Image 1 (cartoon, rainbow, N blue to C red):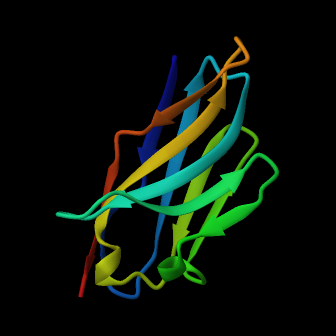
Image 2 (image 1 turned 180 degrees about the horizontal axis):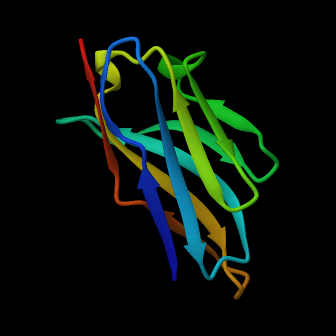
Length: 119
């Protein structure tokens, strides 16, 4: 089994910054990719940013230039969020595509962390 534990959410004023972290642990052979999604009230969950095992990154258009996704060798992914806007308010979810020791791929989600940006 694999666990994703998120931290770093909170309340911040518009224009401020937050850094989210997500640590993956458990029966992990390797991690293929990690990502951050978010879901605002009344809206569908949307992809915010992804990072591959080769550190290739992609961003949703509205966060380009403001958010940065990164990962370390200990299977932790980060999301540095700068110049936050009220429309960034959402629950942020970590996602990991994990290669198990059985050589199968599995998709895991974190529990979510609330980010609230006050205007």
